[in-house]
Image (tube, rainbow, N blue to C red):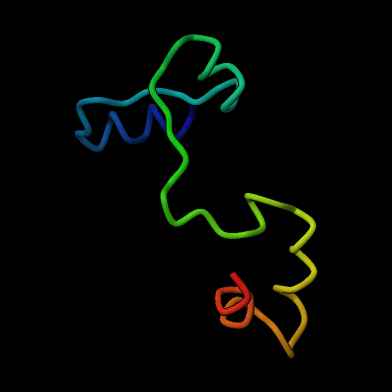
Length: 65
């Protein structure tokens, strides 16, 4: 809320708070979508370890997909 108030004070016109997070946002029927370039980790947390392995990393994970 503090950030929304500060942005409004800076002149932004369409300002809203995300109090309650994405769960409340969805419950209120507000629009949302997953980006098309969703990383493998978001699709399957099982692969999160690959991203921190120097031998694999994000580039290697992209090749594995």
